[in-house]
Structures are given as structure tokens and as C-alpha cells.
Image (cartoon, rainbow over all chains, first blue to last red; front, top):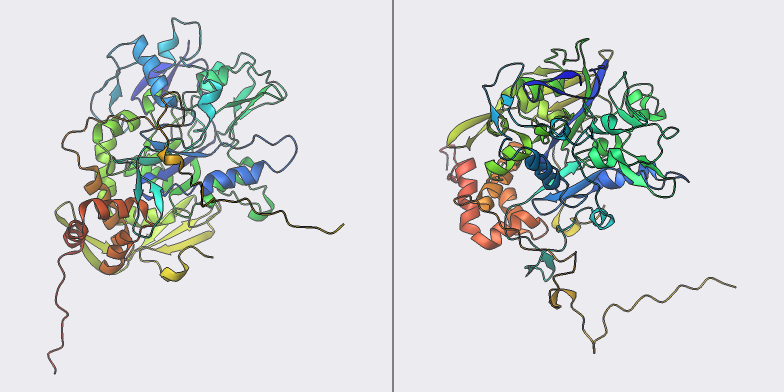
Length: 411
Length: 111
């Protein structure tokens, strides 16, 4: 079996195919700290794609409440357990962080390596039908009900929780691609988007079984599997709205909390990320390292990154996002001036920002973060498109309008 | 035939109040949340979450009173839960810590 480089693991690993590489890689960052679980992304996904006959099941974005459940239920714990069964106690990280291995080295088994004795490409499981019920189970049905001051009664968890936004990770080493016996799943050379060829798929559900993130879904009436298509007409720039310029996916573009940023990363011929520090995604993921992959230890090199929630116990976060958590949170809690400005690009434009520039502004106030003074400057970030055209210009201090309490819940 | 609106479903029967949340827990009910045991000694998730909210909104330029008001409004469920559980002094202490204690209004020395 070929060995491929996985920078998130800091080492090479087994994978079914040689690294074919792509010119660009679809990637995104979600800032968990700002998500309010309004599910606007989920509804945008659903309303965008399920509008016509044959498209009834084209709905992939979900937001789930951790640590209670998931969609399908407990998808992550179940896959973590399968790897643990293959290599008890061995899923540890070591080594020191370097430029090429920013999270150190993963000493445990990936889902591919754990499967070597099984005859499968990756360890996995097929969720039962009931595990696909209630995409945000246990957010709305906890045991406690607490009367609120205004007479309403809302469910309320009695401990910490956070929202996890999930789409297909369009992995660099997709388990679904490796798993498919008919080679019906492919990764596009132009943008790294992973798609299922509906003409070839015969519904064996190996992708459903072996994707650790459980993002391919089986459709019983067509007897094929389907998955997130990364709104590829928008990313291609073929959506009529875009004027030929690449656009963010719908779930990114609609986010009221402005927690999402999506773009394309240039990839070198050897499959590594081209050093592009003015690309906002590259800057936040590789330079500042404040956004991390979801369960990097699975080994698929996922391309959706998360700014971890600040209030969650570090042990839980390290399991979910790897050993880069402490550095990421330190970088987010006290962001550099450039990072503070680049974070303003989240959902600032529907068009994909390929590079940015920061214009320095005045110091506007000082606050206290972690017992130390923290200065806030009204810098301005300028986002540019693929051809260098200015797409957006946002300052750290944005103009605000406060809706009166009388109209809080109206348009 | 003219269109006639259907009668609205009756939500409350005064003689027969229904409260789904008051019904007995059944172990086999897949929608009944089970207790999640979280062994995180020494971790004060509520305080950490409240501090995150204060810092996030402070960076956006929200003034002190607007942040404090958010905690008081029940529609901001997570922030209000901390406010209700720990009290207004606790929230005020975090805001003070992040933005500095309230200072007396400065005057120009005239009048």
C-alpha cells in the first residue's frame, strides 16, 4: 500500500492511492466561539439543493450540540473506539512541533492503519436508521426545564456545551474514495472537492461505513449514496450571481454569526500547501495556527478547520482537535493585529478571497485578556479576488446598529 | 366552492392541561436525554463561557452596559443562564475585569 505524507500527523501513512494532488484545495474555517446554532447554514443547504425532483435528499450541513450527541448519534466516539480496539492505549502524540509538522507527530493508528488486518480500507461502521434521527439531538430535549424571567420555559443543559458545525471535509485522503469498490468517488483536480459519480455508484455503502465523519449518506429510493458537493457551481464561478468569479458555498455565505470563512488553497506539485501567507486561510491555519482540523488522528487530512471553543476542558478539545489546541487558543485569545483584522473577513464577502492586505489604523481601546492588557487597533483588512480585484474592505471596528428591545424578534 | 380556512388546532384545553415535560422518564425513549457525566474537576465552564462572551463582544466595540444588558435578557440563553445561576455581581465582575472598573466621568474642570 502506498505511503503518503500527512502534515497534520507529522508523518507518512498508509493510503490506498498515491497522492494525486490537486491544483487548489477547497478549505474552510469555522469559529466555534461565535456559533449560536441558529441552523441558518443547515436551512441554506437544504433550500439551495432540495428544490427539484431527484434532489430531495441533497441536504448535508448540520450543526450538532457537543458533547451530548451528534449526527448520526455518537459518530465520533464510535469511530474513536474502533481505532482504540485495534490499538489499545496507543493513540498518542509525540515529537515537537515544526513548520512541516505543526502539531508534532501522531504515534497512534489512523483509520486506514487500524484496518490493515480487517480487509477493509478503513475501520468504520454503518449507523443504524435510528442513529440518523434528530440532527441536533439533545440540544432541545435535555432533562431539565428552567422557568425564565419572562414566563417562558426553555430547556437548558446544566454543564458546558458547544455547537459543532459539520459539512464534508473534502479530505486530502478521503476515506470514502479509498472505500469505494467501484471507484465511483473522486477528488477533483481543479479544487479538491470530493464527489460521488451517480452513474457509477451502486449503493454498496462502503463510503457511508468508512468515512469517519459520516458525511456520505445512502439514499434508499435510488440505491445510491450521496454527499456534500461543496456547492461546486458557486466555487467554480458558474453561478449566475458570481459574474464568473468563485463564490463561497451557501452554508458559508448565509451565516448570521459570521463564523465561517471558505476559500481555495494553492497546492504545490508535491501535494503540499504552497506557502501563501497572504491567503487568509493559509495565514490563520499555518502561520497563526489558530484553526485546527477535526479529529486529525483519523488520518484523512480534513480540510475544514475549527477555532476551538474557549470554555471547554482542554482534554476534550485535544482529543477532538489534536495537540495544537493550546497554541490555537492562545493565538485566538490574544490575536496579533494582523490576525484580528483577518478575522473580520469571515462572511464579509460571498466571493472567495484569495489574498488580503492590512492597513493600520489607530488604537481605539484597551481591554484585559488573561490578566494582561490587550490593545485593540482599528486596522482595516482588504480582501482581493483571484485576479487581484478588491472584493471587500472591513475595519476591526464595524458600524453597529442596535435593534430596540421592542423589536428584537422582528425583521 | 369558496375557500374556507380550516379551524386552527386547539392548543390548550382548559379542563385538560398537558405538560409533556412533566411525564415520567422512560429508559427506552431514544429522545430522552441521558445524563452526561463529565469528569472535569476544577473546570468552571460557566465562568469560562461568560468571559468568552464578554471578550468577544468587547472586541466588537460593545460598551459595558450593552454587554451587561445582554446577560440580563433571557433570549440570550447561554449568557442568561450564567447570569441567573451566578448572579449579576458575578457577571459584573467579569465585565470589570475585561474592560476595567467603572471610572467616574471625567470633567474638563469647568463648572
